[in-house]
Amino acid sequence: PPRHWDEHSKVPWLYSPTRHGGHFVSYDDEESMQYKVDFARELGLGGFMFWEITADRNETLLDILQSARTP
Image: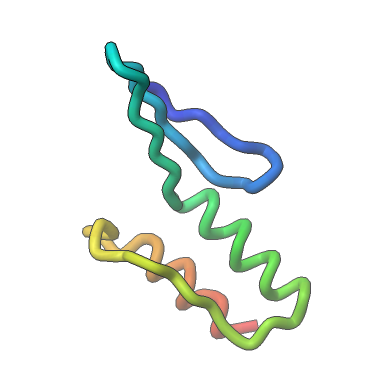
């Protein structure tokens, strides 16, 4: 399915229709993670929380989070 972008929440999402409805998935990618890092910096937040990151096989999302540790 094609990647869509939610401009309000700044996250990508996918939808795959089926005969009985469909499957909706939202997730983080490099673009959405960078928005979150920038948002946390803007608000002066002290950290991040994420629910599940094992699909970050190349650690690109972790690299973006790590970059938030340096001003």
